[in-house]
Image (cartoon, rainbow, N blue to C red; front, side, top):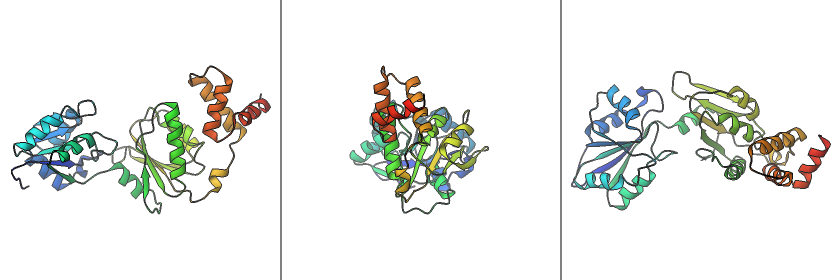
Length: 283
C-alpha cells in the first residue's frame, strides 16, 4: 500500500456475518493503515482479533461522525492512512460514513474504496429476478406520515424495477403488514444473510408478517418489479379497509373518525367518503 505526503482514507467493506467473507485486500489495508475508524469498536475488535490485526481503533458513528472529521483529517495530513469500517457491509450504505467521506474529499485527500460484502448485492444475487437496475430504499422511516410517503415511493418504483430495503427485527412484522396494502405479489425476505441461521423466504407480505412475528436477526427485503399497471388498479377489499382503520385507530394520535378515515384513504388511494361507506356496511 503506497503512501505519499498525504494519507489515504480507505473505505473498507467488512463481512455482514461470516468472517471468512472478508477480502485479502481488505485484510492488507487493515494491517497497514495507522488507524481504523469503526462504527462500533467492540464489534470491529472481534474481526481484527480473528485475523490478528493490532491496528489502533477509534469510534466513528452516527452521533460523533462530524466531531471525528478533524481527528481523521489531522492524521491524514501527517501522511498517515485511515481505514473506515462499519459494523457490517459497506460504509455509507444505510450506515455512517458518508459525512466523513465527503469532508475528507473536500479537504483534498484521496478516498479509496475497498469493495466487498454487501447485503443488498447478496440478496439480489439469490432473488432470481431479471432487472435492469434496482432501487434501494434503506430502512423504512418510523413516523406514520413519513412511512406512508415511503411506501408510496416503493410502490411507484416497483412498477418498473426491483426494490430492496432493510428492516430491523422488532419492526419487520409491522412493515410487512403495511407492505401488504401496497404490493400485491410475492416478495423475497432474507434473514441473517451469510450467518448460521440464514434463510430466504418467498411469499406474500401479509403471510410473511405472521411468520416473522417474533424474529431475530437483520432483514433484507426484495420486492420484484411488477411490470404491470394492473396491480396498481386493484381496489382494496373491505377487509383491508377495516383492518387499516382499526390499526390507525389503535395506534395513532387522531382524535376523530374523520381524521382516521382521511388517513386510511391516503394509504389506500380512496376518498374519506369511500372509507366511511366501507365501515358502514361492515358494522
